[in-house]
Image (cartoon, rainbow, N blue to C red; front, side, top):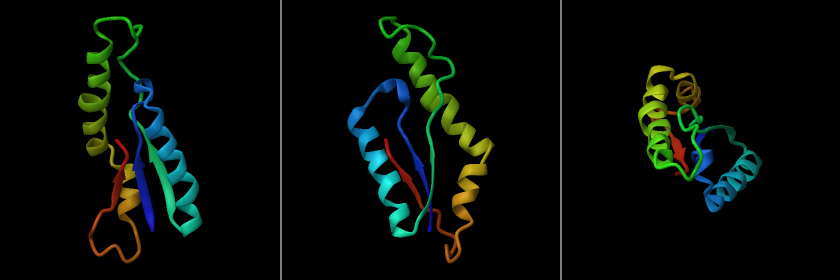
Amino acid sequence: MKILLVGNYGPDNQTSMRTFLRALERELPNLGCELRVITPPQRVQRVPPTSRLWKWLGYLDKFILFIPNLALHPSETAWAEKNPGNLGLTRVCGVF
C-alpha cells in the first residue's frame, strides 16, 4: 500500500507530532507500506519568532500556499492514488 504522510510545518516546532511522524516513518515500511512524507515548506515566514507577523506568515505558508499547491501540482498525491487494488479510494494519512 502506498501512503502519503502530510507532516507538520517545521517552524511550529511541535515535538510530539514530529515524534509521531518519525514513528510512522519507521514502522509503516515494516508493514510493507511504501511511504512518502511531505511538509509545508517555509516560504514567507522569514521573520524572527518575536515578530508580530510570525504567526500570520506561518498561516500563509501552511494554508494559503501549501494546500493549493497540492492541488496544482498533484505529483505526490497522484503517486499515492496509483495504488494496486485502490478501488478509486485515496488514502492520505494526515499528521497535523
